[in-house]
Amino acid sequence: MPVARWKNVIFKKRNPDLPSYQEPSDSGRQQPWWQRFLRRMTQSTASAPFKESTHIDENAESIYGANRSASNATTEIIPSADTASARSTNGGRGGGDRVDSSDRRPKSRSSNSARNVNVKAEAQSQVSTNNPVRDLRDTGNESEMPGGEGEQSNERRGHKRSSRKESEYHPSVTLEKSDSYWFGAQEVSYDVALALKTIGYEEPTPIQTDCLAPLLDGNDVVGQAHTGTGKTAAFGIPMVEQVDPSQNFIQGLVLVPTRELAMQVRDEIARLGQYRKLGVIACYGGQPIARQITALNRNAQIVVGTPGRVLDHIGRGTLQLGDVRILVLDEADEMLDIGFLPDIERILGNTPRDRQTALFSATLPPPIRGIVGRHMKSPTWIRIGNEVETAPDVRQIYYEVLESDRIRACVELLKNQTKDGKVLLFRKTKSGVDNLTQALQRQGIKVVGIHGGLVQGERNAAMRSFHAGEIKVLVATNVAARGLDIPEISHVINYDMPQNLEEYVHRIGRTARMGKHGVAITFVSEWDFEIFDLLQESLGTALTLEKLTF
Image (cartoon, rainbow, N blue to C red; front, side, top):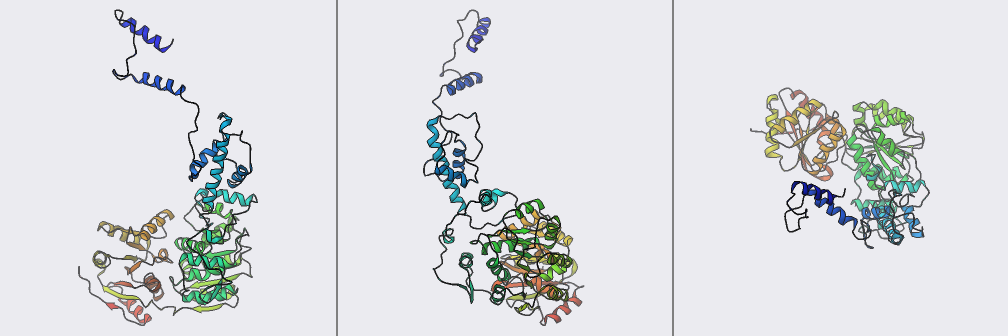
């Protein structure tokens, strides 16, 4: 029974003395919800002819709107040269999302849909040219990787890459045309020279000046220098120059002691090789290995990783090192302290004997010299300063505090004397890091702690907040802080006494980076004077004693 007739019957039964039911006017009381619903449905079915839900102007630049319109294109469109090129740009998949066969479009809309496909092609072309660095991050999410899945698919299907000049990627960064390009006294390629200018490197540091020539000539190098002297570019530039981006296999390998250093070195090499479109991957623990396997299966030439995870990939067969041309051991003494020496030996045994090898270390203990003797060929030895030399711009002071007063002394320093800069506190153990972090947080100090026991996401979050300046105090163990490149650190506090001279030098080397000034503070409790006297004797100088009142 129709709705209107049904309502009239009910109305007459309940009100026999009244006239038939009449719909209330719009000016009367509000209609019931079911009446408003029926009216809207009636109006929608009697509406104007079909219109596309998304309209893109001819000058539209939004790739999202272009994708949506392209997906609405029907099979009634006759392929033209423009639509064929648009499909090629989209990885050979045609117009994006799959078209529902029940979606019928008038033939008169075909020209507009074809124009939308062309808009999509132009938008994707614009996006692809804005990503010069094909840095294969270990996210496992292809949509977040520069270059994207479409670009990789084009390469696998034989499509040619864009022939745009490198200078067009960064219109504000240009180089004058010349027969040769130089970084200091060393000649480099146009791609590397443009990358150096983009990054902002103008003159090489001493370690770069001494290492570039022998490494570019193919010689092995042993470099002795502290963190923050520019070692990464010293071996990164020769590696970028020697790796062939057209060859889809691993040609360069860098071994580092920690996850954070692996990510930093990966980023630096990716910046140096951004105009050569090199694939650079970081492999480290604390991250799902499936993501790294996915990245390794893509087009990549350089791997930066920790020995444990690299050895894991070798055992799984997901990392082949038979074609490695250049291998770098960065922070070799720290890898030795962690216990990576057996892993390093096994990794070196999986690489070609005729490879080029570079080793960088702040100190050269006997086991490191043993690696040099067994695995390197007549290396060039380069030393920047004495192996126990401290930075001249570091002001070294110490406070005599009781063991029970160290927390109070630390709070006093952080609230009154170091509040204008970033502070790095050192503890010997993981539990010590956690306890000190919690104690400082209870005192109202914004602080984070990092150590090897944290999952990678927690470590990354802590480092991001510290880098961004949201948190000014970082508590870390020796291993976790190894290789951290944070030039803004103004103070280093040895909350626990360093056990030897090398450890002391490594710690205070976190401040006074690249010519800046810094302060190194050491707490000396009643149990530390014997070690402290030996430290000053080995250092050859006396630290300045200052009084702390609280």
